[in-house]
Image (tube, rainbow, N blue to C red; front, side, top):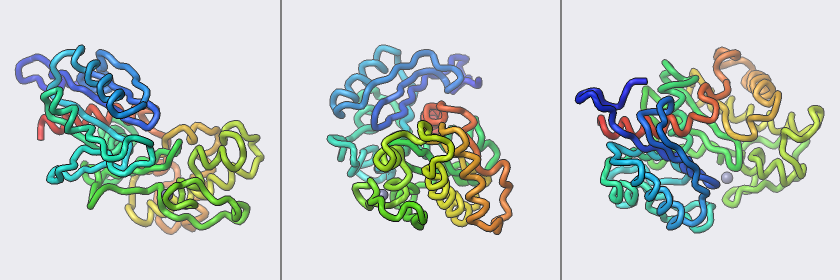
Length: 299
Ligand code: ZN
């Protein structure tokens, strides 16, 4: 592992936060392969969670920089007075919360800040399944559905950041009646294919349903529609599918198969390598957070 800085022979200590809606994974070290300490804090109220994170970091020593991959939506415009905030989120109590600015001021260090999925895309680009790609997408399918993109080495922001989980798929013929669970759009992709949508429809997680249950085909259809859409929009060399729902045995292969059918093989992508599991397993987000810290120090 290359230390963050070798100029004086002493690696700089970096802080990393993977801030999720249920837990904050926080770590210090010089990268995801050299974590010297790590802990998990439950995501309760902003005051409580951020105070616990702050206390923990202050016990670890002076940080050269902090990287945060954060659930959102978030403000990524460095020129905005609300940069580093979680904006209007469905997570109760967390709307309009200053995360990055507050921690940066209290820890007196520069902060790199991005969405959780952009962070994971960056982690996979730097160390995992998207190494060497001009364009790569990271999608998480879990409590929600979100996607981040890395284009020519930089995460994609735009006016805010992509919200790939909120596209509107065509309804599967066997799933015309379910109203969906997205509080903003009802039956967007997240509303139809996230973990809570699966639980609400079938009373069980996808992995607990029998292999011949129609849920497998329906969810693979929706996620196949997402992948075909991503191929059309971004021409990615990798679409990395992570998150809890993706642990369902056989789901990745079903999605790959459905993507091929839906795209009619028009895009000429490599069906074997383009759609894949994370190369870093569950470490994509924290690896990306370390990379955000490294980038902000050396910007
Ligand atoms: Zn939605």
